[in-house]
Length: 338
Ligand code: FES
Ligand SMILES: [Fe+2]
Image (cartoon, rainbow, N blue to C red; front, side, top):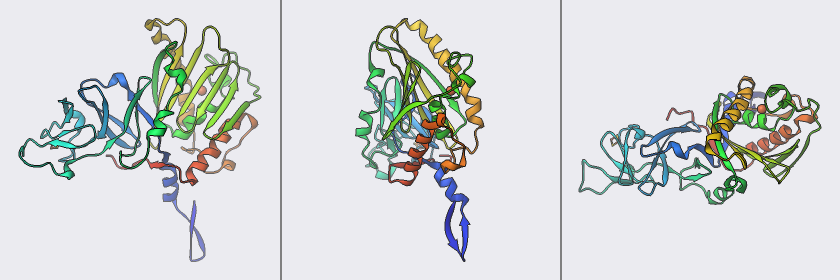
């Protein structure tokens, strides 16, 4: 990337490319399933950061920086006690806001502010734990939380079967795989694409953060940057919906959390079948998407070849480039192994 003139010569900075790669939209990302977080704290990775999750006495989930401010012990080795997270090393206790409220070695002494740790906003919706990756004091995150999930996913008429995967791929490549209609009859020729024609007359519209694709009997709604929902065009009878959300774990590692929903065959025993089928379809994409180079999408449209069938992805790229160059909230994927 060209970034300076030195002695009349153009200088290309690989650092600058690295910085562009690591910039990710700062928004709510799914960090795990609600059912994973029980009485014991657990550690999760998100945007190159280690995060500990725990529940207080009311069952409310909280997210803190994973390492104790005292001597860096892994807080997920600790325990939940009295609504607090207690470190396994010297039993300092932290509340859900990261405030240290007890240092057993000095019971009579006021707890200094430097004993506190970072906390992140965390909410639970549709069986997922969602984290806002900035610490609480930095940004206004509530309005975004309200529009986090489509109402159809909270409609009790649907039973949702969960599935997930972790791909060794950059967020942008993963997103493009679900906007790509032309690959369906090729990559998914034994599953969802069995009956799809190879010839594509793409029908889509894009406005602000949404790209809507009409594909056969389904409507695909992608909401920049991390959510995708398939709903049927028909509104009567048996219906199937599918939702996926993407969470950048590292620069080139992305978690996918999915919910396959149905308003028929509702007995829970069927969940396994729907989860397994959705995982199988994802698996068909995985090897291809993990093979793509460059790892994030290229820095300009002209650097790959586009055809009309690629319209939704081109639109996504335009939105991504707009994000990179605008003042929209961004977060850097941390290099630190912390
Ligand atoms: S390292 Fe956590 S209390 Fe000492
Ligand atoms: Fe696919």
